[in-house]
Length: 452
Image 1: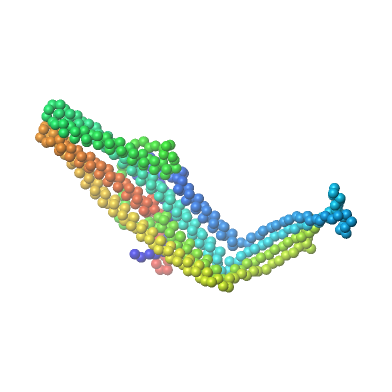
Image 2 (image 1 turned 90 degrees about the vertical axis):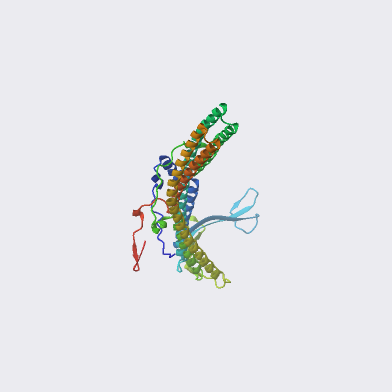
């Protein structure tokens, strides 16, 4: 496929994309991700750290000034009768002499960015900060999509629970019919054992479904930053409609994917790092200055006669390094090549994910229609076989087969419905969140060509 310069637009506000499902409970849960999700908080902290690093780099463009001050008192002690001038006599009879000295001053240093090393470092770290912003957006989108996926799974679990409850009730009626037949002497105890088997199996499915629902509920609790013990969701219905997207989604929408934007900016950071490595070939040029005041009294400390100062440029260069700088440049270029490959692979994977989701939603719509017809036929076969068993025209094994087939058909229909909901959520995730045509970047002419 052909690659072109990217125009990342992950900063476009996606809005509450989950509202397209028209489920108030899901709306409330997804909105809590920004408030309480701990993975998102960690990504946000990493982004703030990256921005702080850029500000730290920018400070290198300006001179730095440091100041110092000190006060010292020095003295010596001599026995009486020596030749030193006596200042004081202590309790032990010894003589001490003391001298006070005060100093203060400042130092100015400024590395002049002649070769662009600092500017390229800023460029690299700025791109890395933008990549971190992309990672933050990706973490937010992933958490929101995970909430939706687990929520849909939980609602399907609610539907299964209703199905198994209805099945247990139906099988209980069938068991009573068989029991009546056995009591009347027109059915064998084998039929009764088969009816009891189906009834107990349905009860087992109903019990096991409680485990699955609890796990989905616990997963949602963690995603919204709560402990499973303090979180619960009442049983509820499935979303009425499953949103679909027509084929032919513009590829420009993929530029809104946070992971693509992050990969592109990591590539830009690696490119700037090559310039940093190349700047190491050239000498560092800096301007330094210092002034120091030294006096025996505070009153005369900051007089010109008490000062010592220096000012001038400095140059430092490495003449022989054993090939270290060449290796650093080669390593920086290799790192850049790796990020280019990663970026392209991210784009290819994005196209695959979109096409997979589009194919799934298209085929699953057809499959659901077919499966609904299969469920209707299976339920009709179940009804007819039970009536015929009452009349004694078919054995109970026929009833068992039709009831098992009807339950299996209902389970398959629920699984298809879940697959449609998950495919819809995964498509939105693959496209970088919610979208509108108005969000697409306008065409921009560059060198006679037009790009988005």
